[in-house]
Image 1 (cartoon, helix red, strand yellow):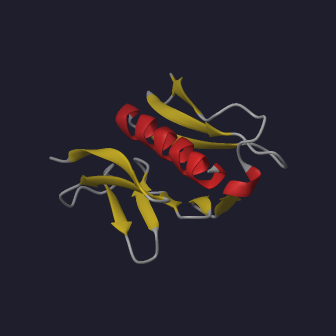
Image 2 (tube, rainbow, N blue to C red):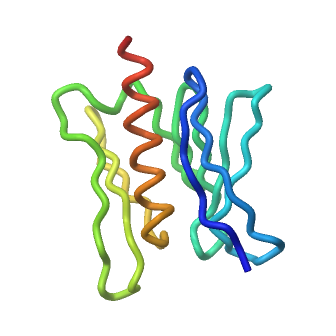
Length: 123
């Protein structure tokens, strides 16, 4: 049994909190307030890390400076092949990043956390 994550912003630290209770590939997240980062995983265990300055998915690193601007905000998409959801992260330079294999609630919370982090950088 696991608890679905929730997102909230604390300054520029975005927290996706939940508990997997030891379930591999669970959707819970952990916040490290000292480093200002948050980690969660997709259903296959790929690490998703949101820090004050960037988003890291597996080995893919996207600084917040490359996101946003005139490009649309991140969106959540349904993938009927996997029956899971995806979050599109639009970049100013380079190819866009798609974070795949997420439960709906995690995808929505991750999207909101990215948007909130980008808003925090603009103000």
